[in-house]
Every structure is written in C-alpha cells, then in structure tokens.
View 1 (cartoon, rainbow, N blue to C red):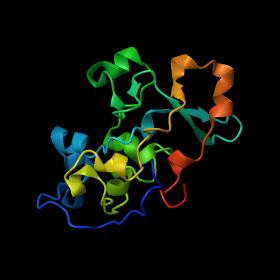
View 2 (spheres, rainbow, N blue to C red):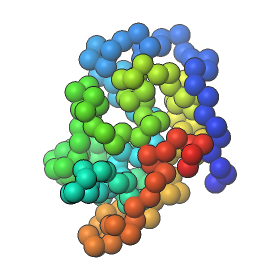
View 3 (cartoon, rainbow, N blue to C red):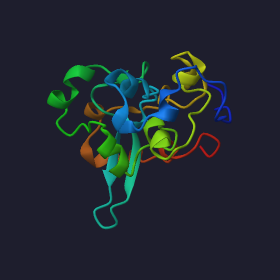
View 4 (cartoon, rainbow, N blue to C red):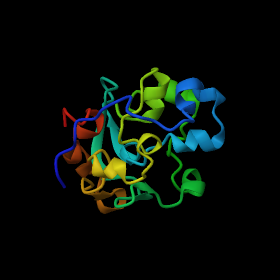
Length: 166
C-alpha cells in the first residue's frame, strides 16, 4: 500500500449534496448510513486512561470488524452481539470525543466539507481504501486474538490523525 494521498476537500460533489444542507437530525436513515465512508476506524478497540480520561486507539479491531472490507460482519445485530458497540446518533456524534478527524459525521457536525475520497463525493466505495484512510492492511487482528493485557502494547496514533500527519 502506498502512502495516503493528501486529501482535498470540497471537490466536485454529486448534485444531491444533502450533507451540506441538512442537519444530522434531519437526515433520512439512508442518508445517515451513507455518511459512513467505511474506513473502520471507529470499530478499533479504544482504551481510556482512567486518570486523565484520554482515549487511545489501538490497531485491534472489534470482533465483528472485517479487516478487508472494513465493515461490520453483522451490522444489523451488532449491538446484541457486542453490547458496548456505540450506535452513532446525532446526539452521540456531538459528544463522542474519539471520532476520527476524517469521519463524515464529525465533518458534517462541524460544518466542514467531505474529503474527495469519500464515497459520496468520489462515487466509488473503494476510494476510501485507495486513499489509505481505511484500516485495511493496518489491523493487528481482532480482539479475540489478544489478551486484555496486550491491548496497551497495541496503542497507535494514526486513527486520530489526518492522513498527512499519519
């Protein structure tokens, strides 16, 4: 995999730019789901420092994360199978501090444009992988492959960085 391209924002976008005109709350279910670029970064195991509250990403995927497709293997039942799976809602997006800086939910929340590699902009689901944004090729494995005491050794910075910083 090559190095990630520097992202451009505000490139040519489809005529139905709902993400520019609607609030998170006003989006239909289909629009809401389409905001997810399929990077898989939010499905990485995170560790919270009990003293500082700081959240650290690891390169360990949730048990349901498909490391190639970068999608949940059982999205419809994820919260039943993984009780601590966070369901993104407009309220959650406004309060969760660990959403990746490239996350479309976060960008829309903050009034920022989507990157040119986002599938809604590029028109291609694979563009998130081609741009080096997704977790594809970066996962050490899924959570069942590690002991809890190994998690701190798997802390990485890249999920919380912009591509040019990673």
